[in-house]
Image (cartoon, rainbow, N blue to C red; front, side, top):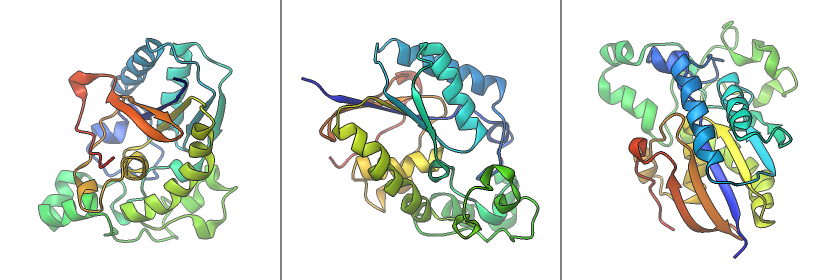
Amino acid sequence: MKMANLILVRHGQSQWNLENRFTGWYDAELTELGKQEAKKSGTLIKNLGINFDFAFTSFQKRAINTLAIIIEEINQKNIKTIKAWQLNERHYGGLQGLNKAETELKHGKEQVMTWRRSYTTKPPKLDKNDPAHPVHNQIYKSIDPALIPDTESLLDTYNRAVPFYINEIETLLKNEKNILVSAHGNSLRAICKKIFNISDTMITKLEIPTGNPILIKMKKIKIISFEYLDQSRAKEIISNQ
């Protein structure tokens, strides 16, 4: 039976993951461990023997570089690659750059967990005049500044990532194309919410580890099977399919 293969991989560990900071749209580098995670992802994907038709990633270098390492490892350098800001990490607003543990001490664990895991709650806005705001970053100069957020809930991330997924990626999967996506914890949580029909309540429990590809086999976008390729680092994939 001919089917489409979709692989979702969260970028390898970034420097700000290591430092336990809210990263959001800050363009953090991969750590050495992050590069190793990306390389292992590539090895696990290579072992599947899948020829990919398209690869998608965000505008952020931790995802772009993870994808580059994977493509090098699987030796499929001619894959058509599309970069989309809609696949960027969730924008953490005024929390960007703050240490998560220190923020818990200041605002309380419950408030911080609400900011991190609630589906609809947005963190405080990042002032557009702040030099750290992405409107000042050259990599977004081609994007309408009105589209660049000051802060986002997971719902906001869903509302940009999922329409892109439906229009650009799902269309290809319907035509039995094999797709590789290197993105971020929250943009992938949003896409998984759509793919696996996860409720607004249950999505708060979904965690996606860095550098561990999820293989989803589909027939006309109906899920046939799904699994993490590295079972030793797997988290539960919540599904209402």
